Length: 128
Image (tube, rainbow, N blue to C red):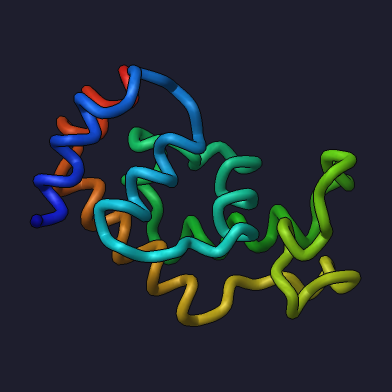
């Protein structure tokens, strides 16, 4: 089954939703990969947890996100979460040094290309 088949099937398998979790689970299922929790959380917090804004991410955008995380006023974490789920295991308690790992940067930029390729499928799936 190709990634397009998985995406197309997801249009019918899942109720329409604007949910960030549906967006991420669709990407993970379509490309048979696990997106690190901290990547999903940081992108969600900064407004990139949907196909419309996600497809506009560039290397410069990732740098802006990193600066935001390092310098923004603290945002409260949900009570049941771990700092590692938001800053990765390298930057727990070192938020002022936060950066995406090189592999995670490449993962995000590669997924941006895929989302651009299948924009219409994601828009139908997530009701955008």
